[in-house]
Amino acid sequence: MQKKFRRLFAPLLLLLAGVLIGSVQCNLFASDADGKFTIAIYPDTQMEAFEKIPSQHEKIPTTKFRNRSQWLVDNKDKFDLRFVLHTGDVVNWEDDREQSQYQVASDAFVPLDGVIPYAIALGNHDTHAVGPAGGSARDVAHTKTYVRDTTVFNRFFPLSRFPDAITFEPGKIDNAYQTFKAGGVKWLVLTLELWARKDVIDWAEGVVASHPDYNVIIGTHAYLTANATIAQNSDYGERSPQYLFDNLVKKYANIKMVFCGHTGHIADRADTGVHGNKIVSTVSCIHDTKTNPVQIMEIDVKAGTLYRRHFAPFDDYDTGAEWQNQRKTVTVHGFFKIVVV
Image (cartoon, rainbow, N blue to C red; front, side):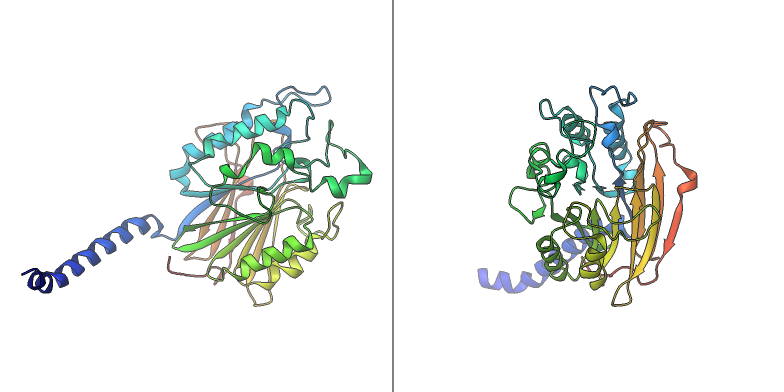
Protein backbone atom coordinates (compact mmCIF):
# COMPACT_ATOMS: atom_id res chain seq x y z
CA MET A 1 0.00 0.00 0.00
CA GLN A 2 2.82 2.41 0.89
CA LYS A 3 4.64 1.67 -2.40
CA LYS A 4 1.44 2.28 -4.38
CA PHE A 5 0.93 5.60 -2.55
CA ARG A 6 4.46 6.72 -3.39
CA ARG A 7 4.03 5.80 -7.07
CA LEU A 8 0.78 7.75 -7.32
CA PHE A 9 1.74 10.86 -5.41
CA ALA A 10 5.50 11.20 -5.91
CA PRO A 11 5.16 13.15 -9.19
CA LEU A 12 2.61 15.46 -7.56
CA LEU A 13 4.87 16.06 -4.57
CA LEU A 14 7.82 16.84 -6.85
CA LEU A 15 5.70 19.28 -8.83
CA LEU A 16 4.50 20.96 -5.65
CA ALA A 17 8.08 21.23 -4.35
CA GLY A 18 9.17 22.81 -7.61
CA VAL A 19 6.38 25.38 -7.39
CA LEU A 20 7.31 26.22 -3.82
CA ILE A 21 11.03 26.55 -4.64
CA GLY A 22 10.24 28.70 -7.65
CA SER A 23 8.01 30.88 -5.50
CA VAL A 24 10.76 31.31 -2.90
CA GLN A 25 13.27 32.24 -5.61
CA CYS A 26 10.88 34.82 -7.05
CA ASN A 27 10.44 36.33 -3.61
CA LEU A 28 14.18 36.32 -2.98
CA PHE A 29 15.05 38.15 -6.17
CA ALA A 30 11.98 40.36 -6.60
CA SER A 31 13.90 43.31 -5.15
CA ASP A 32 16.62 42.80 -7.78
CA ALA A 33 14.27 42.80 -10.75
CA ASP A 34 15.40 46.24 -11.92
CA GLY A 35 19.10 45.38 -11.60
CA LYS A 36 19.78 48.46 -9.45
CA PHE A 37 21.17 48.82 -5.94
CA THR A 38 23.66 51.02 -4.08
CA ILE A 39 26.78 50.83 -1.99
CA ALA A 40 28.02 53.59 0.33
CA ILE A 41 31.64 54.73 0.67
CA TYR A 42 32.93 56.67 3.69
CA PRO A 43 35.75 59.13 2.97
CA ASP A 44 38.58 59.71 5.46
CA THR A 45 36.85 60.31 8.82
CA GLN A 46 39.96 61.11 10.84
CA MET A 47 38.78 64.63 11.67
CA GLU A 48 35.55 63.29 13.18
CA ALA A 49 37.11 60.90 15.67
CA PHE A 50 37.78 63.22 18.62
CA GLU A 51 36.13 63.14 22.01
CA LYS A 52 38.62 65.49 23.68
CA ILE A 53 39.60 68.02 21.04
CA PRO A 54 43.33 68.86 21.02
CA SER A 55 43.99 72.60 21.10
CA GLN A 56 45.42 72.64 17.57
CA HIS A 57 42.14 71.43 16.08
CA GLU A 58 38.82 73.13 15.55
CA LYS A 59 36.18 71.64 17.81
CA ILE A 60 34.34 68.97 15.83
CA PRO A 61 31.09 67.41 17.05
CA THR A 62 31.79 63.72 17.51
CA THR A 63 28.17 62.99 16.71
CA LYS A 64 28.86 63.46 12.99
CA PHE A 65 30.53 60.07 12.61
CA ARG A 66 27.69 58.04 14.09
CA ASN A 67 25.13 60.38 12.50
CA ARG A 68 26.31 59.22 9.06
CA SER A 69 25.99 55.54 9.95
CA GLN A 70 22.54 55.94 11.44
CA TRP A 71 21.40 57.91 8.39
CA LEU A 72 22.51 55.06 6.12
CA VAL A 73 20.59 52.55 8.22
CA ASP A 74 17.48 54.75 8.24
CA ASN A 75 17.69 55.14 4.45
CA LYS A 76 18.72 51.58 3.67
CA ASP A 77 15.47 50.73 1.87
CA LYS A 78 15.23 54.08 0.10
CA PHE A 79 18.60 53.56 -1.59
CA ASP A 80 18.41 49.75 -1.68
CA LEU A 81 21.75 49.90 0.12
CA ARG A 82 23.55 46.54 0.19
CA PHE A 83 27.10 47.25 1.38
CA VAL A 84 29.19 49.97 3.06
CA LEU A 85 32.92 50.53 2.49
CA HIS A 86 35.31 52.78 4.40
CA THR A 87 38.50 53.63 2.48
CA GLY A 88 40.68 54.32 5.52
CA ASP A 89 41.98 56.90 7.97
CA VAL A 90 39.12 56.03 10.27
CA VAL A 91 40.95 57.83 13.09
CA ASN A 92 43.72 60.44 13.13
CA TRP A 93 46.26 58.79 15.42
CA GLU A 94 46.66 56.32 18.22
CA ASP A 95 46.26 57.80 21.68
CA ASP A 96 48.62 55.54 23.60
CA ARG A 97 46.61 55.86 26.81
CA GLU A 98 42.88 56.38 26.42
CA GLN A 99 42.38 55.42 22.74
CA SER A 100 39.45 57.82 22.74
CA GLN A 101 39.46 58.28 18.95
CA TYR A 102 39.07 54.56 18.42
CA GLN A 103 36.22 54.51 20.91
CA VAL A 104 34.40 57.22 18.93
CA ALA A 105 35.03 55.35 15.67
CA SER A 106 33.97 52.00 17.09
CA ASP A 107 30.76 53.47 18.44
CA ALA A 108 30.10 55.16 15.08
CA PHE A 109 29.83 51.80 13.31
CA VAL A 110 27.46 50.25 15.85
CA PRO A 111 24.32 51.17 13.83
CA LEU A 112 25.67 49.08 10.92
CA ASP A 113 26.52 46.00 12.98
CA GLY A 114 24.23 43.17 11.96
CA VAL A 115 22.17 45.49 9.76
CA ILE A 116 24.29 46.40 6.72
CA PRO A 117 27.51 44.48 5.92
CA TYR A 118 30.58 46.69 5.81
CA ALA A 119 34.32 46.60 5.25
CA ILE A 120 37.19 48.90 6.18
CA ALA A 121 40.41 49.42 4.22
CA LEU A 122 42.90 50.67 6.81
CA GLY A 123 44.72 53.94 6.23
CA ASN A 124 48.14 55.00 7.50
CA HIS A 125 46.46 56.87 10.37
CA ASP A 126 44.87 53.60 11.47
CA THR A 127 48.27 52.05 12.17
CA HIS A 128 50.99 52.44 14.80
CA ALA A 129 53.01 54.49 12.28
CA VAL A 130 51.07 57.67 13.08
CA GLY A 131 50.97 59.28 16.51
CA PRO A 132 51.01 59.56 19.41
CA ALA A 133 49.57 63.03 18.81
CA GLY A 134 49.16 65.51 15.99
CA GLY A 135 48.80 63.01 13.16
CA SER A 136 52.47 62.94 12.12
CA ALA A 137 54.88 60.01 11.89
CA ARG A 138 55.61 58.39 15.23
CA ASP A 139 59.17 57.42 14.30
CA VAL A 140 60.44 58.11 10.79
CA ALA A 141 63.11 55.44 11.07
CA HIS A 142 60.54 52.72 11.76
CA THR A 143 57.48 53.72 9.71
CA LYS A 144 57.74 50.70 7.36
CA THR A 145 57.52 48.42 10.36
CA TYR A 146 54.96 50.42 12.31
CA VAL A 147 52.60 50.77 9.33
CA ARG A 148 51.95 47.01 9.60
CA ASP A 149 51.25 47.19 13.32
CA THR A 150 47.47 47.41 13.50
CA THR A 151 47.02 45.89 16.95
CA VAL A 152 44.85 48.68 18.30
CA PHE A 153 42.65 48.86 15.23
CA ASN A 154 41.97 45.14 15.36
CA ARG A 155 41.13 45.36 19.04
CA PHE A 156 38.34 47.85 18.35
CA PHE A 157 37.32 46.22 15.07
CA PRO A 158 37.68 42.49 15.72
CA LEU A 159 36.72 39.83 13.20
CA SER A 160 33.48 39.28 15.12
CA ARG A 161 32.23 42.53 13.56
CA PHE A 162 32.88 41.06 10.10
CA PRO A 163 31.38 37.57 10.47
CA ASP A 164 31.58 36.66 6.77
CA ALA A 165 35.09 38.00 6.10
CA ILE A 166 37.91 35.75 4.88
CA THR A 167 41.27 37.22 5.87
CA PHE A 168 44.86 37.07 4.68
CA GLU A 169 46.23 36.86 8.23
CA PRO A 170 44.46 35.07 11.09
CA GLY A 171 42.78 37.46 13.50
CA LYS A 172 43.45 40.60 11.42
CA ILE A 173 40.96 42.46 9.23
CA ASP A 174 43.74 44.39 7.39
CA ASN A 175 43.35 42.34 4.20
CA ALA A 176 40.07 40.54 3.69
CA TYR A 177 37.19 39.82 1.38
CA GLN A 178 33.43 39.45 1.73
CA THR A 179 30.75 38.44 -0.77
CA PHE A 180 27.13 39.41 -1.33
CA LYS A 181 24.46 39.21 -4.02
CA ALA A 182 22.71 42.22 -5.54
CA GLY A 183 21.28 43.31 -8.87
CA GLY A 184 20.94 39.66 -9.87
CA VAL A 185 24.72 39.08 -9.82
CA LYS A 186 27.42 38.10 -7.35
CA TRP A 187 29.85 40.56 -5.74
CA LEU A 188 33.15 40.32 -3.89
CA VAL A 189 34.52 43.24 -1.86
CA LEU A 190 38.29 42.99 -1.38
CA THR A 191 39.98 45.36 1.09
CA LEU A 192 43.76 45.71 0.93
CA GLU A 193 46.36 47.39 3.11
CA LEU A 194 47.84 50.60 1.75
CA TRP A 195 51.11 50.26 -0.23
CA ALA A 196 50.57 46.53 0.02
CA ARG A 197 53.20 43.87 0.47
CA LYS A 198 53.84 41.60 -2.49
CA ASP A 199 52.56 38.52 -0.70
CA VAL A 200 49.31 40.36 0.04
CA ILE A 201 48.88 41.21 -3.64
CA ASP A 202 49.70 37.62 -4.57
CA TRP A 203 47.04 36.44 -2.12
CA ALA A 204 44.53 38.92 -3.55
CA GLU A 205 45.26 37.64 -7.05
CA GLY A 206 44.43 34.13 -5.89
CA VAL A 207 41.15 35.35 -4.41
CA VAL A 208 40.09 37.10 -7.62
CA ALA A 209 41.20 34.22 -9.85
CA SER A 210 39.26 31.71 -7.77
CA HIS A 211 36.04 33.76 -7.98
CA PRO A 212 35.66 34.32 -11.75
CA ASP A 213 31.87 34.59 -11.55
CA TYR A 214 31.99 37.44 -9.01
CA ASN A 215 32.18 41.14 -9.83
CA VAL A 216 35.05 42.47 -7.73
CA ILE A 217 35.18 45.80 -5.87
CA ILE A 218 38.55 46.75 -4.35
CA GLY A 219 38.92 49.14 -1.45
CA THR A 220 42.34 50.44 -0.47
CA HIS A 221 43.46 53.67 1.15
CA ALA A 222 46.14 55.02 -1.22
CA TYR A 223 45.60 54.48 -4.95
CA LEU A 224 44.70 57.62 -6.92
CA THR A 225 46.28 61.07 -6.64
CA ALA A 226 44.30 64.31 -6.37
CA ASN A 227 44.06 64.59 -10.17
CA ALA A 228 42.97 60.94 -10.54
CA THR A 229 46.25 59.52 -11.83
CA ILE A 230 47.42 56.24 -10.37
CA ALA A 231 50.01 56.99 -7.68
CA GLN A 232 53.59 55.91 -8.41
CA ASN A 233 55.14 55.96 -4.94
CA SER A 234 54.91 53.42 -2.15
CA ASP A 235 55.76 56.03 0.49
CA TYR A 236 56.53 54.03 3.64
CA GLY A 237 54.87 50.84 2.47
CA GLU A 238 56.18 48.20 0.09
CA ARG A 239 54.48 48.33 -3.32
CA SER A 240 53.08 51.32 -5.18
CA PRO A 241 49.48 51.70 -6.42
CA GLN A 242 50.89 51.41 -9.95
CA TYR A 243 52.31 48.00 -9.00
CA LEU A 244 48.89 47.04 -7.64
CA PHE A 245 47.26 48.07 -10.92
CA ASP A 246 49.79 46.25 -13.08
CA ASN A 247 49.86 43.05 -11.05
CA LEU A 248 46.23 42.73 -10.03
CA VAL A 249 43.69 45.31 -11.13
CA LYS A 250 44.24 45.27 -14.90
CA LYS A 251 44.80 41.51 -15.13
CA TYR A 252 41.30 40.26 -14.34
CA ALA A 253 38.14 41.05 -16.29
CA ASN A 254 35.93 40.64 -13.21
CA ILE A 255 37.58 43.54 -11.32
CA LYS A 256 35.12 46.39 -11.85
CA MET A 257 35.78 49.19 -9.36
CA VAL A 258 38.50 50.54 -7.06
CA PHE A 259 37.68 52.97 -4.25
CA CYS A 260 40.29 54.92 -2.28
CA GLY A 261 40.93 58.01 -0.15
CA HIS A 262 44.15 59.46 1.35
CA THR A 263 44.62 62.50 -0.90
CA GLY A 264 42.77 64.99 -3.07
CA HIS A 265 39.03 65.56 -2.88
CA ILE A 266 36.67 63.82 -5.35
CA ALA A 267 37.88 62.48 -8.69
CA ASP A 268 37.58 59.38 -10.84
CA ARG A 269 39.05 57.63 -13.86
CA ALA A 270 38.32 54.69 -16.15
CA ASP A 271 41.01 52.26 -17.23
CA THR A 272 41.01 49.39 -19.70
CA GLY A 273 42.17 46.00 -18.51
CA VAL A 274 44.14 43.48 -20.53
CA HIS A 275 40.89 41.76 -21.55
CA GLY A 276 39.40 44.98 -22.92
CA ASN A 277 37.28 45.40 -19.78
CA LYS A 278 36.68 48.74 -18.07
CA ILE A 279 37.71 49.49 -14.48
CA VAL A 280 36.28 52.59 -12.79
CA SER A 281 38.29 54.06 -9.89
CA THR A 282 37.15 56.81 -7.52
CA VAL A 283 39.03 58.80 -4.89
CA SER A 284 36.96 60.47 -2.20
CA CYS A 285 39.07 62.17 0.45
CA ILE A 286 37.01 64.93 2.04
CA HIS A 287 38.56 66.38 5.20
CA ASP A 288 35.47 68.40 5.96
CA THR A 289 35.52 69.92 9.44
CA LYS A 290 31.88 70.99 9.41
CA THR A 291 29.85 68.04 8.13
CA ASN A 292 29.97 64.31 7.33
CA PRO A 293 29.95 63.52 3.60
CA VAL A 294 29.27 60.04 2.28
CA GLN A 295 29.36 58.74 -1.28
CA ILE A 296 26.38 56.76 -2.56
CA MET A 297 27.16 54.77 -5.69
CA GLU A 298 24.17 53.38 -7.56
CA ILE A 299 25.06 50.35 -9.66
CA ASP A 300 22.74 49.50 -12.54
CA VAL A 301 23.69 46.04 -13.75
CA LYS A 302 21.31 46.00 -16.71
CA ALA A 303 22.23 49.43 -18.08
CA GLY A 304 25.93 49.12 -17.22
CA THR A 305 26.00 52.45 -15.40
CA LEU A 306 27.40 53.88 -12.18
CA TYR A 307 25.62 56.90 -10.71
CA ARG A 308 27.74 58.71 -8.11
CA ARG A 309 26.22 61.05 -5.51
CA HIS A 310 27.42 62.64 -2.25
CA PHE A 311 25.31 63.47 0.78
CA ALA A 312 25.99 65.27 4.07
CA PRO A 313 23.28 64.15 6.50
CA PHE A 314 24.67 66.20 9.40
CA ASP A 315 23.49 69.30 7.54
CA ASP A 316 19.94 68.02 7.02
CA TYR A 317 19.10 64.55 8.29
CA ASP A 318 15.70 64.42 6.57
CA THR A 319 16.86 65.24 3.05
CA GLY A 320 20.46 64.05 3.34
CA ALA A 321 21.68 67.45 2.06
CA GLU A 322 22.93 66.17 -1.29
CA TRP A 323 25.87 67.93 -2.95
CA GLN A 324 24.19 68.52 -6.31
CA ASN A 325 27.42 69.53 -8.07
CA GLN A 326 28.94 66.10 -7.36
CA ARG A 327 26.41 64.04 -9.30
CA LYS A 328 27.98 61.99 -12.06
CA THR A 329 26.93 59.07 -14.26
CA VAL A 330 29.48 56.72 -15.80
CA THR A 331 28.26 54.42 -18.56
CA VAL A 332 30.27 51.32 -19.40
CA HIS A 333 28.70 48.84 -21.80
CA GLY A 334 29.14 45.20 -20.90
CA PHE A 335 30.46 46.29 -17.52
CA PHE A 336 29.03 43.51 -15.34
CA LYS A 337 29.03 39.75 -15.51
CA ILE A 338 25.44 38.48 -15.61
CA VAL A 339 25.63 35.34 -13.50
CA VAL A 340 22.66 33.42 -12.16
CA VAL A 341 22.76 33.64 -8.35
